[in-house]
Image (cartoon, rainbow, N blue to C red; front, side, top):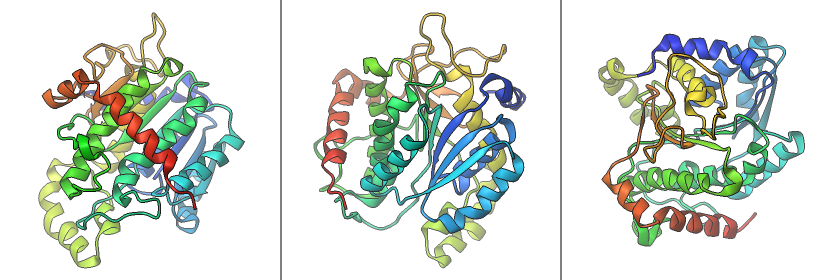
Length: 336
């Protein structure tokens, strides 16, 4: 576990080490994304942050808070329902008109559902789109901007380290959809796609983190379920889970550290990128090599190489297969 004092010392150094950081937060108006964004506002010098969310009116208080915390920063909201690939494209086009380089993409869209497959107009399951396909589209579209940055971080918050099952003959779960299969495919496909993208020569300086944030006290159940079910969780279950949870503010602090520390940078020769600390070694990548550029991280800042299932999928070159499927599906999605 990376000690909290190391996390905080690194974050305090952000002002001098990465001034003018430019970041995109997808799903940054609540929960883990919002908490991480607030920490960025507290610690960065003249940051430029773009926040993608569904409702501009609901985001207004957050923007006011960010500007109060950091008057020298620039905070812009992009309204988009990112369950649709077409809206992801529009959001990326708006961003590309504004910036020439992007240091960080931090993605948390998603939710929880007890229902079956619910297709968007683009024929992708709504929850699967939020957890995986739309996030991959952001990476695909914004990689040219990330390549122009010395930091070049992509953080996808979901289930890094919990790769297990994969429906290889039905990757988009048209025939085998279930709550469990959606979660498993989303987690495993995210890691495999990141590992594939890290091997693309043009991406040699990009860094990918698939983060499992732990149990964090957010409003995800309130946002995902009707009031009676949300109340059952908030007042009936959460009191028993709270002792094992991560404080929302601490989660934001640790996520900012993951997103900016050189511990999670790719090592190219003697080159490292990010905020340096003398007391932490380079993280072990998902392939077992130090500083490989793809990290399966938990909320403590610890990394893993995944289990036997992931190792088997790697040996069968399934990462390439998954990415080819992903590109084909999101490129072919009907645009509104």
